Image (tube, rainbow, N blue to C red; front, side, top):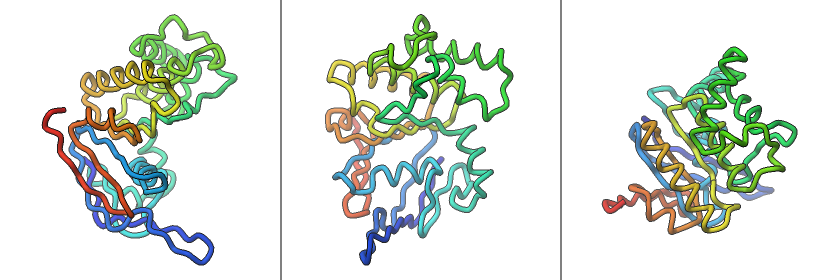
Length: 227
């Protein structure tokens, strides 16, 4: 479970100070699904970075299962991310010189998993996203939707507790967007993940049971009983 208490993130731009997040209190239950929306530059990605331990709050605490992420050493924080949190980004972030299989395997290297086991788990992960037959292809040989599927397989191969996605459909056409969302929603249910996603797409936001809207650093939660 995530517990955010009084989370503020302050940036200094020249002589001006801006609060991307301003005293955010938020609870996200295990297995929950939350979509984050708001205007460009309004703090959406900042909040996701806090949840992923990629940034630390200026004030307040971000706790995951009772661990204060902002209070951990960099080494311990890296270990928490490697073991518990999967990331999916808009730009896929695949290594262009590695095959789909090798890209997925990179997520297992920090966990000290043996080579044979890495290969087997990566192959299974690619199979689970419908790309078992494309394991030997480079990113440049795959479509945008296929590259995002590789990125999803890479995020899930380490069997994380949390999946964080930052505009995962932002670079995809409408048909491919829907395919990727169906895949993510299916994996969320299948694996019991805590799934948190930033999106500007209102049609995607309406599919989520819970919506966090950020404006001027403040978060408003809306429950969607129909989702």
